[in-house]
Image (cartoon, rainbow over the protein chains, first blue to last red):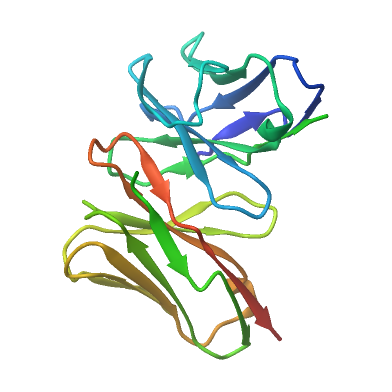
Length: 113
Length: 111
């Protein structure tokens, strides 16, 4: 069964540093999402992306965050200057079309020290 | 903003007992999805409900969408240790481009 992959699985970074989290969507999926989950808490929507542009973003997704699909395959989330409170699990999810099931990647655990 | 709440937050059951989690949205939903997240894992899609009053079954799991399309439930009959995990409901925003996950119910099954 096709699956979403994410790299790295774990990223440790110092406060103020930039990080890029990468996702490879399922090949025929056109809608992409980033979510974050602080340990033990619910899954929080960050941003949705379709046709090379942001469809919607949440309040969490401030100017420190950006997304792009640089090469037609990878879908990336960049955090420009990480803060301690950015420590969380970040999940990429992809969807064939709106209203279909979302397939989640295994996540990247980001630890900001 | 739109909120999706679930109760209970935690549930411990003996293996073989039934389990139910309830999901309530502050707004009407066009559809609702249910996901399961095993400890240390990622959310995995279980099912989607679209119609008012819809009931769907998957083996021991029964999903229901309320008549007003603002609430939903997941019922597991005769729980097994493989049912352990956190169950999330999730629904789209009015635009359909944002997805709100519920607060989740963490299920522990005691063998």
